[in-house]
Length: 196
Image (cartoon, rainbow, N blue to C red; front, side, top):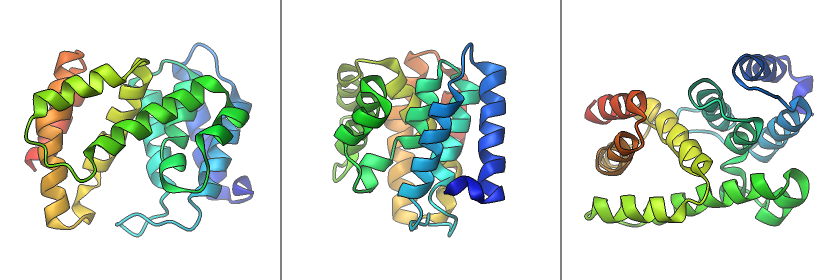
């Protein structure tokens, strides 16, 4: 159990504290369940930095809790956003364990991630339109923004060619989309990180 580890317990306590501060209502049991599943699902995975992979979904959840404090469903989705894409867990499992709302948002984030694989971004405006048309729930794009922001903050650990590709995607797609949605702070930070 993840919470037997004092480090993970402290991380969860910090996330719950931010959620209590910024959200109208907090289902602590649901957030704890998502936290534990994310730790378990990613327990054998490492990031390019050598850190446990779980640090990424955790940081994405923290960004969402601090910058887009909509609801606890969005926090749960942020914690679980890579589980279906990167592990053996399925959307059907997420639906059974966390409900339709969570599973639909996770599915949306996963589909958005999929459109970038293997594509050279040459028609950025078409990709922005595609992203907006795919999104039925604004929380999908907000989780994806938080995911991209954390990945850009930790970009230095990737090979140079991947850094350049992600920076170009960020400048061509994510920063302009943030601007259109009026998320100025994200736009500025994404641009600064991409230029770097």
